[in-house]
Length: 399
Length: 230
Image (tube, rainbow over all chains, first blue to last red; front, side):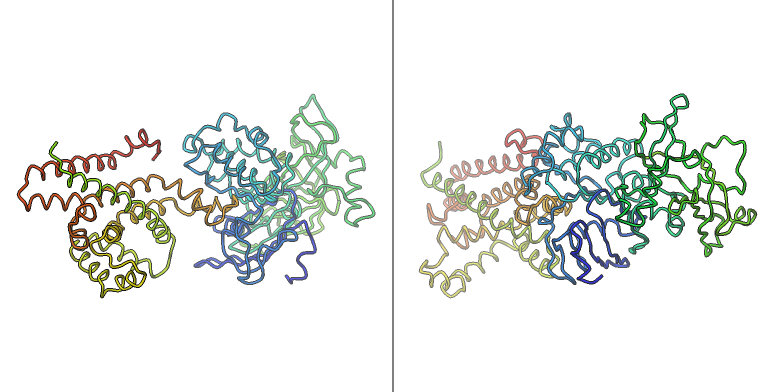
């Protein structure tokens, strides 16, 4: 990226970041929107934490970094803004609470040191993260999940312009993850603060992120809005059993007797605010929402107290999608959609499982990824353009 | 009471010396220990070795070279003469400087260990909470290293109380100026005044025991006495 390409957007965090450590090399260009949640996904050793630390100013790197209009590092090993002058909040993987202070002491430490007007008051943050009963405890008296909640609260009280979270759930057991995730979702919903969320767990990323960056061995594999990235075949190959499209649906009908709702697929997870005249891609998008969807255009979902017009985030795992040539007649599978194959990754002949990208309802931007065996692919004689029926065994409502 | 006026003077002088040396050592030793705990410089080894020298050298060797350095021909002596301070041997200032050097490792080493035990993480956390390097030190490292400061202070104080060789070499035995308890006891014994020697010796024995007891049972006692949590 050239210097001139930077700075033309005040609502982005942009940069080229290169870090060389022993046998590891991180080399990525980033371009994150400064709203919503940006998930940084990769397996361990992919360079996620190094990237986050570089953005925070905790790790020296070569390259440049711009936060909106402010320059955090000039080209090369040039002038770099020290960590304590960057308007970030940082949640460390191990929470990093000050052991000599109580939970409240940790929070007050941040409150006192905040240089800008806080987005949230002490009382509000205590309420938001349910810390009332924990305030007088020392960190060693807190559970892993409680420590993380205090750490998140502390990072918010420093009045950051962006919140960086480094695998905040990694050290927690499965059940305790469920204790924290709803808080992060509340944070996202109630506070207007952009977040960078690092994780090696695609479930967490899919639940929280609007925009994602996929890292692999220090390189960028893909970056973009989550729907766009998760519907790429190259990404699906990489994610393996985690492969699956994340999209948004809008509830069109509620069926109380079946405890189900019907939801129409919204093409992109980006908030559909595009008007007809503003963007060509927006026209299709808008039509798909405003037009009353036909029955085969919608998905059946479990009803979690949804009402009509409620937007829900859904994830369809590739392994839950099967493909047949004809419309299945009698089947217990509720979600069956017509579609046509748009892409098959051909260079993966050495594998039994193939990922196939299918557009549903003949709509040019509604995609589902299916993982099927190579055997099925050959026996059904599937190729790009084949008309097929999709059977979706389960649709996870993730938010 | 078997203590003479000179004995009391020696006790008072010893306590004054030990307190002053402890204070000076905390002021000088803290930045040195901090630097040693952070640096990757090649100087770390040589500086550490230099500071640890008094642990292995006979006090007479240290005293001998300090005497030469502070004397009229030595570099320190020439400097102090030039500044109009005269020469330092056989003065209170002289034994303070000698004691500071002699007890340096007893302050630097526990502090360095304490700082190293804190690790990088709390300082990084502080950096993300808008603390510059100074604030990271004063608001985070210092409070976290509190137990180490206590250990260092006790050791410096106790070690200075027990000094003999260096003081005799540098300070001699001038009542009220350089004649500390250990020297006073030596003088009593030389003069075959065993009763007086007993009084002072027993006093030092008990005092040293109490101080060391404080140090080694810190976990149980100190928090109750000083409100410090280890």
